[in-house]
Length: 196
Length: 196
DNA sequence: CATTATTATGAATAATGATTCATTTTTTGT
DNA sequence: ACAAAAAATGAATCATTATTCATAATAATG
Image (cartoon, rainbow over all chains, first blue to last red; front, side, top):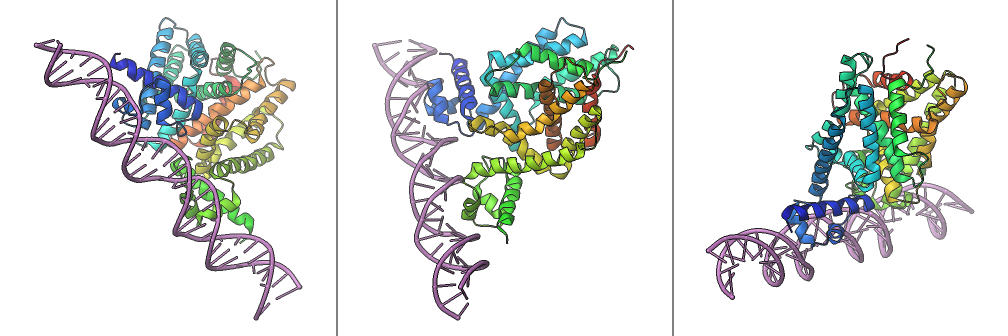
C-alpha cells in the first residue's frame, strides 16, 4: 500500500468519526479502528489529533476550490456564476454530507483555539464570491455601492446556514439545487416587489 | 446572597470561560474560579457541564428575543422591521461579544451531540424573521414567490457569518450598524442593477 | 441561644484517552 | 535468500478533569 493511500484512509476515517461524534468526543482509537490501522500508525502520518483536523480541512477545501473554479471557467455572466457557486456549495451535502458537517464545525473551532492558524484556504474559497461580485460591478451588472467583502460573507453565511439545516433535518422540503437557486435569487434581486 | 444571584454568577463566569477556551477546553474549575465559588457549588445549580451550556443558551436567547420583539412592537413597515432585527442582532456583538461567541459555538454543537435537544429557543428567534417576511407578503411589500422559511435561514446565516468575522478580527472597516444595514439592503433589493 | 435546615466547600475518586516506544512485520535492494 | 531499512503495531504510561460526598459554614426557626 502506497504511503498516500494510508494517509487518505486515515483522513477518510477521521471525517466519518468526527462527523459522528464531533472532534472532542472522537477518540484516536475510533479513527484507528475505522481506518483499520493501529493507534500508533496514525502518529506516523499526523503530529497529533488536532493536526488531523487541520490537514483534513486544508486538503478537502483545496479540492472543493479546484472543482468550483473549474465549473466557473467557461462562464462569464456574473449572475450565472453566483448561481453555479451556490449550487455547487449546496450539492456538496449530497455527495459528502459527513465532510460538510466536519468542515462546518472545524470552521468554528480552529480559528478560536489556535490563534496562529489563519485558515487561508477558507478565505480563498469565499474570495471566489467577492471576485465574482467585483467582476459583475465592472461589467455593470451589479450595483456599485454593494461591497464585495460584505456580499461574500453574507452569501457564504446564507448558504452555510441552509446546509446546516439540511445536515440536521432528515426530510427536506426542497431539493438542494432549488434551495441554492432561491438563495441566489434573493441575493440577486432581493425580496421587495419591484414597481417598474 | 440570593440563590438566583449565584446561579447567574456561575452563568456569567461560564460565558467568559467558554468564550475564552471553548466548551471542551474549559474546565469546571476554571468556571468555579471565575465565579469565585467552589467546584462543587456548580453542581448545586447545574446537573453537569453540558447543562451549563444549554441553560445559558436558553436563558440568554430568551432575553434577546424579548428585547428584539420589544423593538419591533411599534413598527409596521416590514422593510424597516427587517432592518431593526439586523441592527439589533449585530449590535449584540458590541455589548456582549463573549456571549455571542458562545452562542455561535453552542449552536453548532448541541444539535450534533445531544440528539434529543431541539433548540426551540433558537427556532423562536429566527421565526421572527419568517413572520416579518410573511407579513410583508400579505401587505404586498414582498414578492410572493420567496419562501419565508428560506429567507429566515439565509438572513440569519448572513448576519451570523458577519458577526463571526467581527468577533475574530480586531479592526473592522465599518460599524456594526452599517454592516447590518448593508446586509438588509442586499436582502431587500438585491445586488443586480435595476433597469427601470 | 440552641437546634435544625440549607448552602457551600474542596480533596479524593475513578475513568478516560492522547501519546510513546520497544517490539514485530513488511518491504527493499543486492 | 538474506540483511538492512522502513512501516506498523498495540500495550503501557501518565496527565487530565468531571463529578462526588464527607465535612464545614451559614442561615432560619422557635
